[in-house]
Length: 100
Image (cartoon, rainbow, N blue to C red; front, side, top):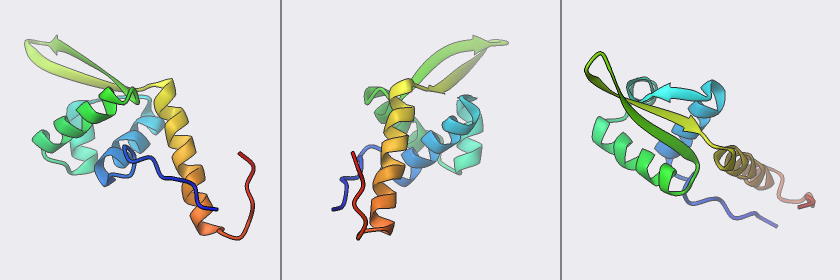
């Protein structure tokens, strides 16, 4: 009846990051940090987990001699987010049968 929730996305910060990247497609580390209110260290760890899962692509480069980290949602990340939302909806309507 209830669908399993993706443990990668079932973290508040990782879900916030993926939700943000779904809407903007690509964002700088500092923008994500500002929008989520996360600390740099925690955000870095969570981005690593999302990257390892293949949900985001992370590119590190330099801009005006300063490090610049860009994060972009991957196709797999979009699909995982959509599945996660569908799974959450199954919790809101537990008596309806959904087709997989």
